[in-house]
Length: 103
Image (cartoon, rainbow, N blue to C red; front, side, top):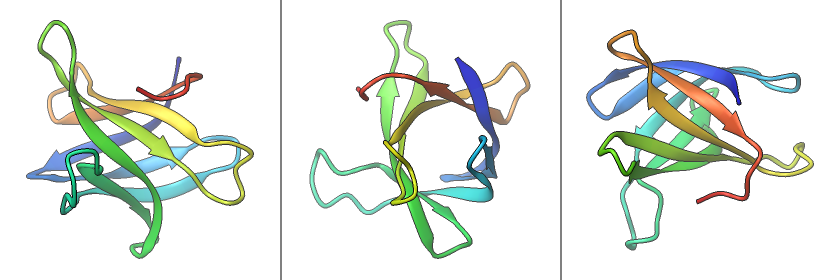
């Protein structure tokens, strides 16, 4: 697993940056209006108006909250799946990349 982003949280808004070999962008993760129970809880944006992905609230077996993230763009060969988890440093969240097919 590799950390591909770092964010801070203020209310329901996460701000930070995503960095990979092909992405280097400031990003925001904003709470979304849910149209259905399967709709994402959050939308992910770069350059304020460009949507890069979505995230869903999840809870681990131990009761820790996290976001299951899917990043996608026409320039990607495949979607990027990641998990946004709170780090050991209070108020900081790490976006951790995973080679999987989502949750």
